[in-house]
Length: 321
Ligand code: ADP
Ligand code: TRP
Image (cartoon, rainbow, N blue to C red; front, top):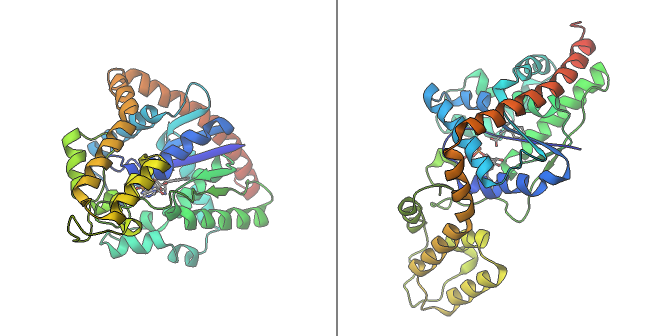
């Protein structure tokens, strides 16, 4: 079974990325050969500074390795652009992709609404994503809930191609963790780099504390009873606390006499302790960047071997060879 996922190197990774995507990969990676790539071609759709993009790729590789992606055993970690065959496949798949399918993509509509220029890269983003998945004949794609539609588009494209040209592609399934769903940001919206509402995984103590202190709550006074089920602090605490600790906090909310400041400090302590081993591993890796680049080089070599096999079939099927 081939498991595959990608994350865009588009900024400092946050705990939404960790709980929504990275942790799943780490938990599932023993179940089959797992391909994890840094989606730098996708990042180009929002025109990052070149130096920033390069720095973000390294940052993300460090984060994956620090968080427990096991490249010695089961996981192939690589940079998307080290396997440029994916662009060739994108071009070929463009020709079986109805424009209407892309026009319905929420992520495209959201980006435009947020003021990004509607360039063709942004528009055909889902076709590049389909190519990522289909190029490596992936069976299972762990992603956050927001990527569900992209997986549906991928299946539509794969089925259309297979119907037209013969069975070339494996039809993939998404794997979306129900219990995490969407991690809220400090403003209560979905946590996202583009909303400036993130809690970084590897920020400085002061920075993380400040972000947590800024989490929005209602204006209830210290002594008033509070509703734990609608509170962003509790939603975040749930990610790092044991079920008993969570119940304890909820009881304190309901009883009153427990302020949001208290809850935020409890959240900070848990979160800081949760990521302690990963911070340590990351510091070690930072001292050994040659090792990190070597992991990416070897990963690309392995991925490319797979890409070569699929592309030979695709070119044959469509009449390019
Ligand atoms: P961002 O929204 O910050 O730009 P990305 O779009 O790069 O994050 O997302 C990378 C991965 O992390 C995706 O699989 C996505 O579904 C997941 N993810 C991002 N934000 C969240 C969140 N707030 N809750 C759950 N998963 C998330
Ligand atoms: N679009 C995904 C995101 O923003 C990243 C991504 C690109 C991806 N290619 C992929 C995820 C292939 C899974 C499989 O989160």
